[in-house]
Image 1 (tube, rainbow, N blue to C red):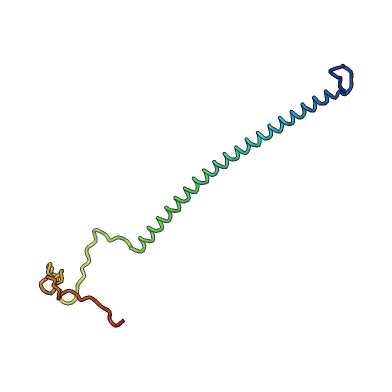
Image 2: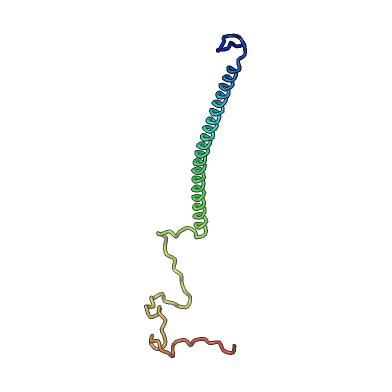
Length: 137
């Protein structure tokens, strides 16, 4: 039992009870606000953690992609080298191929390399090919 602040007698005072209820409601509101603030702080921390994790994941994926590309390039080089074969040795003796038919091996000169045209290299209307035409359709 409490003592009334107004009269000093030990009894329940309605005014005192209302004041205690108001204090309790204020304290509950403070606790609720504190709870909401703490939840917001935790969620913000989660967001920062998630962002940092996303950056770490992106960096790891970039390293993996670069290593994969490097491996593909090395694989392509290996396949190309296997298909082409080893480059010829620069100090090796040249291979001479003999052509059957009595070729003397002498240089024939520039005349043999270029084919001659009819008329001494001058193109005339008669030496040009005739256009192809389709008839009967």
